[in-house]
Image 1: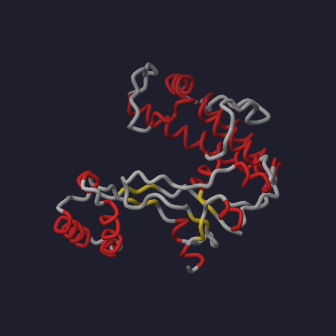
Image 2: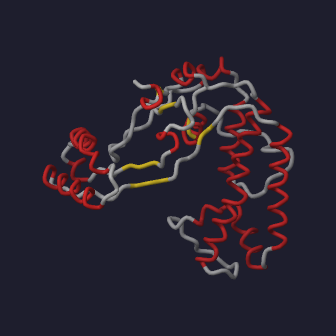
Length: 273
């Protein structure tokens, strides 16, 4: 069975045409720490998994990554994989920004081709190789390349048999743990949960926190929100996705033919093309 990443699964769901308002409940009991956007995304996944394979191709636009001309690796079709051990499926995301001077000179295509031909210098983590690569770019194009951008892999989306009762038990346990966590927290931490549980993403430093009256410093608040998000919110999202899969469409299989119709291609490393 083919495998795709969590991010590509989310991309498929994101392409699904839908009305502005999606009605329904996330779970059999209320979950209060999700904000409106998070609820909407989860309900889209729920709606998606209620479709049969015969309807998927009819309602979905083919998945095609937009090329903004801003990155070396951008655009084109996402891949599906034969093996869960594929390095492309498991490896971290790595990319490089394209300098503004290159875009202004309309040299993006040439720059990308040259970059990929010489990227062997970056396969070795030795600093001198990275420096040599930067010098070659400076000599060839007269620009400085910024550092690489890396992100952890989004994880594998495996379409396998799961037990609905066990999933419910796991979700219920996590929700109960979140309630006990609140009860055992300090007064300042409880204030943070009340005020920011739906905005736990504020732990990311790109967001400004301007209304912190919890008694925690800004740094303490960010660390606490990150812990809350990673300990409760993200695991519940993952479990709910699996719960919807088993409850509403346990026989759905993302076979290669279906994925290709949705705009995916075979992974060259897995399939040897």
